[in-house]
Image 1: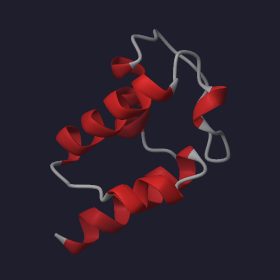
Image 2 (image 1 turned 90 degrees about the horizontal axis):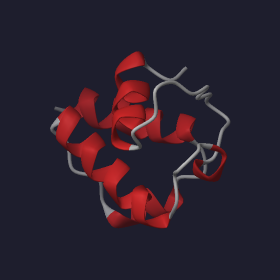
Image 3 (image 1 turned 90 degrees about the vertical axis):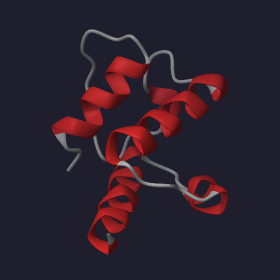
Image 4 (image 1 turned 180 degrees about the vertical axis):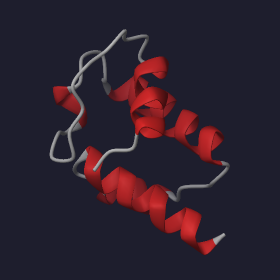
Length: 78
């Protein structure tokens, strides 16, 4: 399940008021989430959670749920 914190980070970065964001959604299903904004979202997530995501980890992500799992795994290691 996508946390409210991650959802709010995504919405704020993409300047969206509200949008449905589910585990199985891909970036292209979120309004305004294009390749340029993808970088902005990843940087915002890193800043929000004070974590670093490796390029290979980011490339492997297919869904927003996978991003949430990656963030959770980074937080559990700190």
